[in-house]
Structures are given as structure tokens and as C-alpha cells.
Length: 302
Image (cartoon, rainbow, N blue to C red; front, side):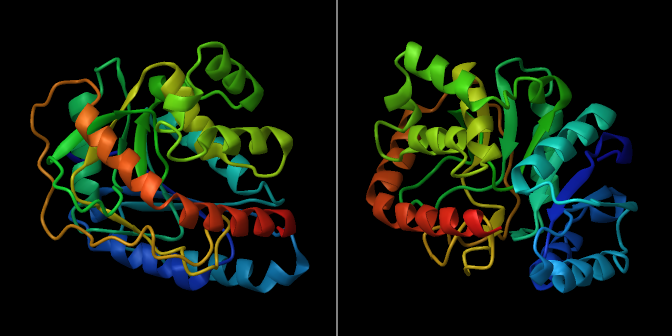
């Protein structure tokens, strides 16, 4: 793959030096890491108790090598996870035209960058494709090599400048459109998971989720996201250390040990795969709700 065709990687970090180092080490095992530009957004301190760990992360960031370039943005104030991601993705994608997005608790398969860049290049001109996603739930039923689902996702993803333009930061506008069009049940995977309530909580200030607004923005516009049949990211933040999740094994997956091959598939939502995700969410809904509850408690303290 030509170096000029590779998307920059933007990584968002805060106060977890060990997680950040693990994320970088996994990323460096990717074939195209040495040819890729890495841009890191280090959020500013919110609580005095986080000062030392935020500085530890920043000290580590200065030691990173192995990429084509490393650019570190140290926030002087605390943006919070949602605002940090929205602002950082906007800045990078507007400059480069495309972007691969990671957070500090995502471990990647050695084939992550290959899949993400091939997906970005393959579907760049497809008006109905809004993003490329690298994570898939540990669904036991067989999945195809790749498939499309309506909406967008947040655990290792990529997009283009013209597609990120669909992002609507105002949760109230998104909720109104969902309700006026009678889409809330479908938005919730036929009531398998309460994304609508998550959006309402974001509006109420109970959470700061950028991800539910990204999902809603794509969903309302009937945009599609490409998913792999085998996961290329592992969410290591389920140990209770992060903003987004508490302790859980519900998102534990086996990272793919082989490349995901991008075949020519119809550019439309796969109803059968959507049904499998719906079934998985419905079965694990109670566990996910416990995760979200713990997440909300942490958000109120951050």
C-alpha cells in the first residue's frame, strides 16, 4: 500500500499510562505502523488526584517511536472524553481528509491498519458508507468476512472528511428526528438495547457520549458502516479503569490472527447480521446496563 494512501491514526488518552503503552505496543505490531502518522490528544487534568497519572502518560508519549511521525497535542484544560474526541477528530479529518480513531484502551490485531486503510480506500466514494469499524461482538453464530450495518460505532473506527460532516453534536436535534420519524425502536435494535435512553441521558447531562450521537447521526441519514466478521480490536478498558465501561467480560473477543479480506459485497445493510447483533444485545442487555450504570457514576465524578 502506498504511504500516501495511509490515513493518520488519532489516539485519545488521559490518565492510564499502562493502557496507553499497551495500545501503542499492539499498534506497532501492525504492518503499516512505520509508514503511518500518529497524532495523540492528551486531555488536561480535571482532578488534582489525576495530575501524576496524566503527567506519567505524557512522559511516556514523548518516548514513542516506530511510526512515520508522532505529533502530541497536550490539552491545557480538561475537555472531557466526548469533547476531546469530537474536537480532535474534526481537526485531523479536516486536515488529512480521512482518519483512523483509537482510544487508550483498545488493543489491535496486527492486521488492524491493513483492514482500516483498505476499507477507507475501497469505500471512499460510496455515498452511503459513513465509516469503517474494526470491532464485532463475540457472536457465536458464523458471520461473513465483512458486512454492513446501518449506523456507526466507536471501538476502533475510521471515516472521511465528507462523512464526518454528518455528525450532529446536538443530541436534542437527533432525538427529535428519531421520534418524529418513529425510528426509536429500530434505533434500539428492536428494543434490544436502550440507545435512545442513552441519547436522552446525554441531553440531560448524565453522560457526555459522543458515540451515541455519532451512531444517531449516521442512523438518521441511512448511512452504513462496514464491520469485520472477526474482531480486529479488543477493548481492554473493561477492567474498571476507564470512563466508558466498568468491569465486564461482555466485550471480550479473540483478536483475529489472520487478515480480514475486503470482498465485493452489496452496499446495503445485512439484515441477517443485524438480527444476530440484535439477539446478542438482547441476551446481554442486563449486563450492559450494569456496565453503563457504573459508567454514569464515574462520569459524575470525573
